[in-house]
Image (cartoon, rainbow, N blue to C red; front, side, top):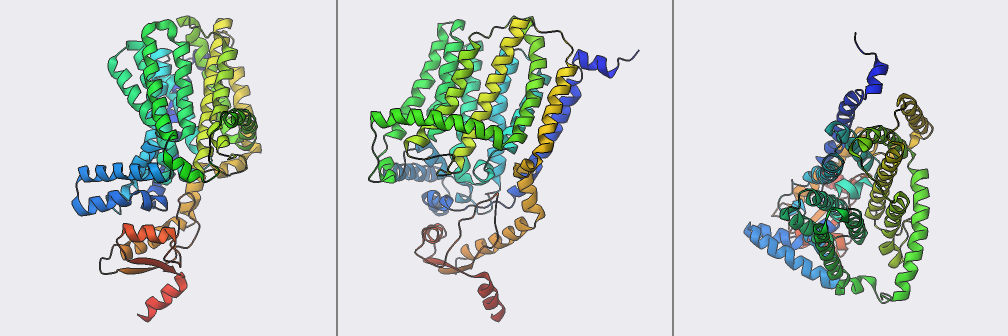
Length: 507
């Protein structure tokens, strides 16, 4: 006799089709992002940071010369702008340095790095360390990635603008890769995992300070939690120390004072007061995320239901222990608040919007990881103490899914802020096609070697989720000058598109 669907639910077999469904939904959710990739173009800081490397490539087509130019860019900005040395190095290698048709790779690269980093970390944590079935790991992985990608506050700096994504998305991927190396090391104690973790953490020290703090906090927590596995775990203090060294090199850069202006100075009193303010902003930020991103919270409820059902089967069987749950959960949320500290210290405020749009992205991602970690550890502890309750999972699933769908129904307007909807609307409205046509025209003029003093039409229309810092009427404007240098023009100005069209008709 065939088992009924209720028997299948009790046996947990229903998670197999749900996993496949989650994989299919996640893959489909990437299609709008990748569809916009073909329209994506460099803008703003891409021209400035990529100037030396682009000229080196055009003149020599030598990778060695390009790398030399990249290091020269790091030196230049380290003393004149900011100390985030690894971010600046990557800034200088933006795709249009090598080809004016290469920028489409940015969304592919950034989503790929985020997916790769998170998946690598979760596989090492859930499958290799917690002995979770690969099917169940894949289910949780797809749900978590869906939340991280679809509900990020600003898609521009997350996936489409190279300069912004390199400074915020790449560091998160580095953190995930480093944490994966941590778990591989404590399982096998292989030297190569220690070396790789040291490399990723060192580079992380040269990126944005928020993610660097997040990486430091995670490694410190892991060392404490897994010290019981032996003294060799203490070798993981090396990557932590190397990241701190990289962060120190960044913090001591003369360019930080130049960018900060006359009021830039560091005192112990200000650092302490920034801690208090960070805790306040962090607490406020938690509430805002729950209130402002209900769709993501609905998906996290579904994830929590799956996680509970999975853990109640594996925790008692493997006799897993989750000591000091209150301290661990408090630490995770304290770490979330800690990422506000660099923003607060320089006088910024996330809630008031006085920061780069990449900052809210990082804080959102850290919030989701803190929530995921709290659920994993808290539910693990509950399953440990309850002995893995054998109560039917159907009522829990029904209640969890009902709550999630109720939230989605009431707050469905929030779905219009999702990455897929923003990308779909950009394509469906015709803005993507219009932007591509205009940028192809602009690139054609700028790459015409017979034109020395370039005149181009304005790019019209809103470009969200892409970014376009326009050429202006003033040839002395920063954007005009940097683009002129990049394309080796004596000057570059723009004119209203209607005037441009009228002149073209006369010609």
